[in-house]
Image (tube, rainbow, N blue to C red):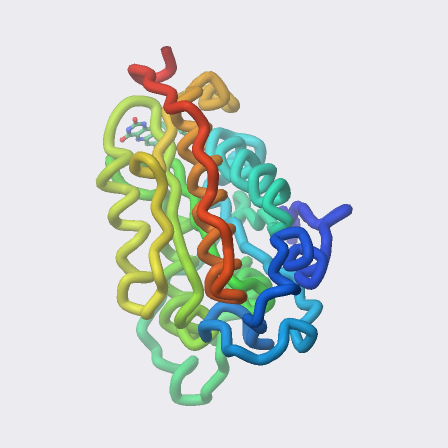
Length: 258
Ligand SMILES: Cc1cc2nc3c(=O)[nH]c(=O)nc-3n(C[C@H](O)[C@H](O)[C@H](O)COP(=O)(O)O)c2cc1C
């Protein structure tokens, strides 16, 4: 099966280096090894783990280099500027099952879906390694694309313990309408899993129809960068308690893409 995974890890600095950069090594906060699920204790900073903070970006479009990918790439670039690693995983264009409520994942305590014949468990494995998640979807008939919903529902049901407490967000892209409804739908499972929701200067939506067209949506792209800054801030704040609130760009205001 096509992996559809893009690594965004090159030249990234470790969590310890990130802390140094933030001037946090001089401070008293320490990072819990489990990452973001616990707030920093007052142990010496030297005890900080070298674990790099990572965000999983799930592309819910079958168009590998489409508009959802463009928005997630903008987030990945901005996370990198904040010394946060990220990885874009696509649901791809192969069939994806929906949850059939068989309950095998719980009955057998699998920690993943009992069906191992599509991308879902691969995404769950990647999620387990990450400290936060952002899902992105194209809008289909005012809703997030079905493949992504199928993956997210199975992931939350079978592997909710790997998501609990991790910051989460969502991104929707459409040609003209339905993005806010899709955006809200995407957030709903995370709101049932004690996941802090990361927001931006606006709802996390972009406008574009043809592949890549969303790159003309200057405000949409800025919204993604602000989201990435806020995600980085939340992750670092949870890890150290000493993160600096992000500086803001001058606001862009566009009507659709102009
Ligand atoms: C089946 C289908 C339904 C769509 N429904 C909507 C819609 O309700 N509203 C809208 O503005 N665009 C709609 N679109 C357009 C896509 O949301 C838009 O092209 C988006 O940028 C695709 O993202 P992608 O390039 O990441 O796949 C639809 C496209 C398809 C294929």
